[in-house]
Amino acid sequence: MGPLGGGHASSKVALADLAGEPFVDFPPGYANREVVDRAFAAAGVVRRVALEVPDIDMGAALVRHGPGIAFLPAFAVARTPGLHVLDVHDTTLRWSTHLGTSSTRRPSSALRATLELVDLHVIAL
Image 1: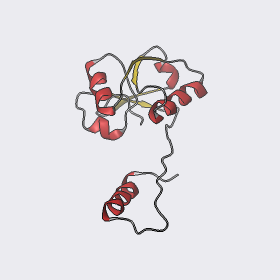
Image 2: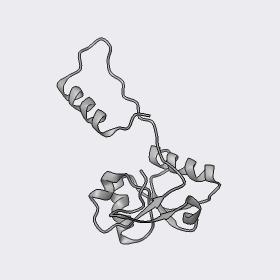
Image 3: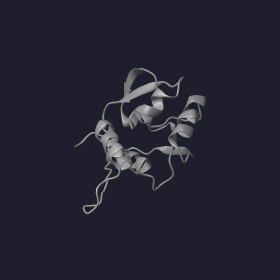
Image 4: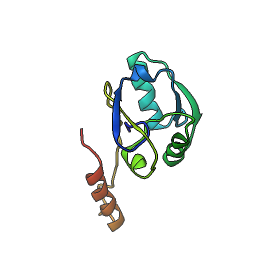
C-alpha cells in the first residue's frame, strides 16, 4: 500500500494534508483498512471513508473516476492507467502476513511455486 492513485509520483503530502479528502477504502476488518486506520489514528488525523469496496481493482477504478482517494498497492497502480500518485512521506504502511506449512508432509509443486512467489514479492522485516 502507499500511493494514492497511480502513475508517477508528483508531489509529497503528509497524512494531515489528507484529512478533508473523501476516501475509497475496504470495509472495517480488512487488513488494508486496519493498517490505514491505525496510521491515521497514530497521527491524530481524522479521515472520512466515503465509499467502501471489497476489492483493490474496484477501488482503483473508482479513484480513477474521481469520487475519492485511496491507498493502493503498487500492482494496482501499475494496472490502472489514469491515476495520479501522491507520496505520503510521514508514514510507512505495513502489515504482517503469515504462511504455515505442514511439518510432516512434503510440499506439493503448487505450494513450492507459491513459496517461490512469496519470496520474490514479500519484503521480510
